[in-house]
Image 1 (cartoon, rainbow, N blue to C red):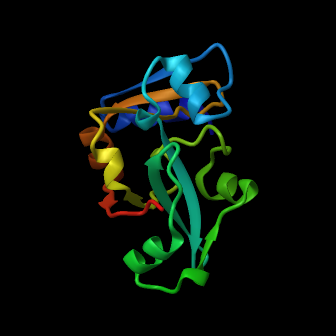
Image 2 (cartoon, rainbow, N blue to C red):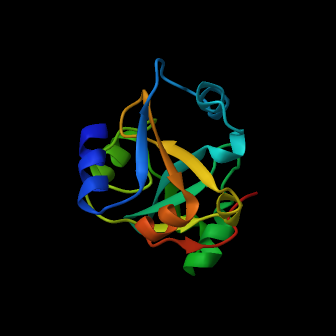
Length: 155
């Protein structure tokens, strides 16, 4: 899947979000923030974990690290049952390649958790479906589109 598929999802579900094409592939949060001329806290990352073999999406500010103990406590399982999905698994579970992953529009809806630090931003920028695309979206729209649970996840 790619940004075209994401745009179709956005249109079909009437989500107020814009896909922004970039001249370059932004490999880091800092690169993305510079290319978009925004603060690094406005860049979000969508990370796929496997929880008992099922995909689970975590959305966090780009430079924050996910604390698996906190995630496990939120889900109500042991930390060792949470595994970070590898790039092939991410592609299989979501349809998107790592580095382009949007927070929604995947092959199947994923249970999603958002760190509260994300909610303190007015507008955020996440994966736009292609390695040279980002998506601009208001946080309240993001939360509605993902039906996210909000819980503290950062280390």
